[in-house]
Every structure is written in C-alpha cells, then in structure tokens.
Amino acid sequence: MIVMETDIEKCLQVLRSGGIILYPTDTIWGIGCDATDDKAVERIFQLKRRPPQRSMIVLMVDERDVLKYTAAADLQVFDYLKKTGKPTTMIFEHAIGLADNLLAEDGSIGIRLVKDEFCRHLIKRFKKPIVSTSANISGQISPANFKDISNDIINGVDYAVHYRRDDLSASIPSSVVKWKNGKIEIIR
Image (cartoon, one colour):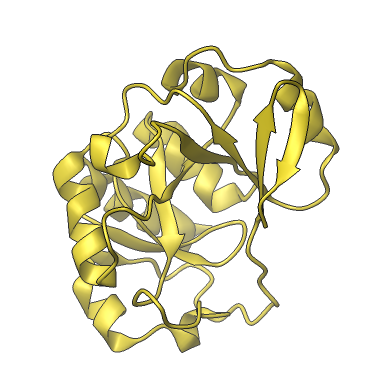
C-alpha cells in the first residue's frame, strides 16, 4: 500500500503540472494525462507517434463524472454498464469540458468507469478525468504487461508508476460500445 500511495502522490504532481504518466489501469498499462489539458494530450500524441484524428479515451470514477463531461447522456447507459462483467468503454456523444484534441471529429468521447483500486484513488484525488491510451507506439502491439513496454515509452513519460510492475496477470483491452437511442452498438 505504501508503494501505491507514493505513486499516486507522484502522479498527482505530474498531472497537475501538465505532465504525462505511465500507469496500470483496469485493463492494460496506459499513458495518461489531465484530460482537460490540450498541451498534455498533444504530448501523448507525439510520444505515441499517433495521428491526431484518432481520439483517445478517458477514465472516470462514477456516473456524476460522466454527467459533468457530457451533454444529454441517456441514464439507461449506467444500468447497462453495471451489468457488464468486463471493463467497457462507452462512446458518449457531445463531450464538454475536455481537451478539444482528445475528442473524435463528431465531438464524441470514449469513457470508461474504472473499478481498479489504483485508478479510482488517483482520479478521485485528481478530481478530473485522466486520459488512457495503450502504452505503445501507434501501430505496434499493445503491451500485455509492464515488462513488454518499450523504453521509448518509459523514457518519454514524466513518471512511470512502480505499483504492479511485477504483475504478470493476463490483461485484456476493454470492450468498446456506443449507446444510441437506447440501443447498444458493439464496436470492439
């Protein structure tokens, strides 16, 4: 628990200063930053060598967060998310208050409500959503564990979390779905 607390404190310092972090999520290791900071988001695009037209997702803790950063979210979506067994990224239309370069061309955003203890504590204490994108150069395979993350990524972030570096559990990306007119459209 001491390692986790130390990592959270260091992540908070980096996030508050516009930096980027490498951290474990409820799925795979991710690169993250303040989801409301255009410059920090741009740094992630540069590090990943990712085209800016490919949007990234954000992690939030609860329904209130989603309602704060989206306009006119259908409340039925939360019932669906409670029933899913695996981490699910939901595409919401009409994102508000997030970095413009984080959004898809149509103004939508992918949001995942995290259950992971580390992520929940970090986001609650940061009091803002955090970007989450796989810890790899764009076009390369997403690393299954910390040991598979390239040095380019590790050296390119402002802080790499120590918590769970030795965890070799199988990691799986989230499902990605879109909720439209009360129906689910499965994207991945």
